[in-house]
Amino acid sequence: MKDTIQSEDWNLVIKGHTSLFDLKFNDVWRYRDLLWMFVKRDFVSFYKQTVLGPLWFFIQPLFTTIVFTFVFGNLAKISTDGLPQQLFYLSGITAWNYFSDCLTKTSTVFRDNASIFGKVYFPRLIMPLSIVVSNLVRFMVQLLLLVLMMIYFGFQGANFQVTYTIIFFPFLVVLMALLGLGLGLIITAMTTKYRDLTFLVSFGVQLLMYGTTVIYPLSAAPAKYKSIIELNPMTGIIEAFRFAFLGKGEFSVWSIGYSVLVTLVVLFLGVIIFNKTEKNFVDTI
Image (cartoon, rainbow, N blue to C red; front, side, top):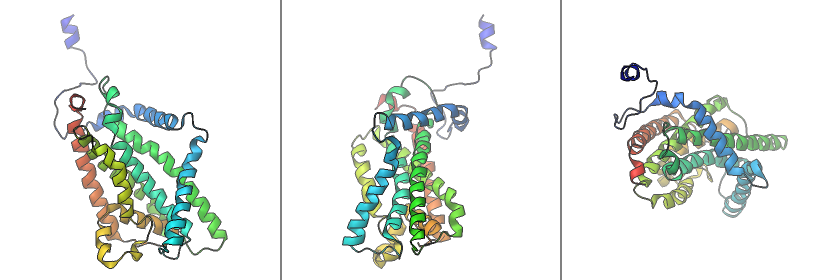
């Protein structure tokens, strides 16, 4: 009997101590069906027992656009680079919402799923990846709202145009997802010891939005603050997003290159820190 057990070939070996750089990407691929199950769970549970259901995908950005148009467009008279105010704000909100949702929801992965992580093995990276994918559904619905509004203003003779850089749109989506994922992984690892961070994330993300070109174009930023705003990697992404869909924005290879570099560094650090923390977080959370 003993010889029989020793001769068996195992297809999965769980080790308590592994290298910091052993990221188990093969296990993530092997558990891809679990990823899609978590995506479905997130989508169903979030809108379960709601009256309007997925219509909230449209309502939230629509009302935010109305508020921004009234406050920043009509009262504050902030420039929108000659674009219709509704299109300008909705384009920024659509891109920002996807990034911020990926960041905020990933930042509480350990806290929200401690009971699951403590009972059964699966690659922990599956959970934050499922959040990024499920948020992509919401992003695409909000993007549809932007396209419908573009069609409406197009018939009204508004001054905007879709540019050739629209072909890079999938690349911009991946950048937003990976940047939000990387930052979220770093924060969720830190919250296992410092719970106060969970209260600061939502507030901090809102403040960060005002440091990004969501409610104003980069061209309208004061010269002394422009370089600081450009240090935010989301600035280049949102400017490129607007340039692709509306033909306005300070799009450049340098700004996108900078965003790519920061995203890769943040993602690398995030995955490494997450991998280190998930080995023993159950003992500290």
